[in-house]
Image 1: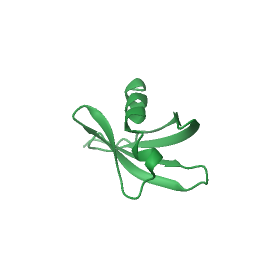
Image 2 (image 1 turned 45 degrees about the vertical axis):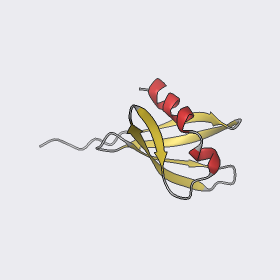
Image 3 (image 1 turned 90 degrees about the vertical axis):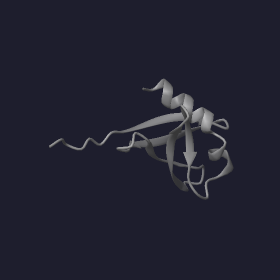
Image 4 (image 1 turned 60 degrees about the vertical axis):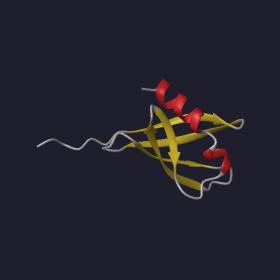
Length: 81
């Protein structure tokens, strides 16, 4: 019987001129549960899924600045393996 491993890490990523902290938790399907905040402290929780070799943001009611940052998140995740 194997033990479950809980892998979590944080990355500081610059989006729209602001440095933001992204918290990642690796899932058993090798994708990530992720959260970050905006400048008002509103927390956004979403999933980052690898599709066709690229990391994509999946979630509901996320702000435009976050939905348009797929490429930035992809680069950050690939560079921090």
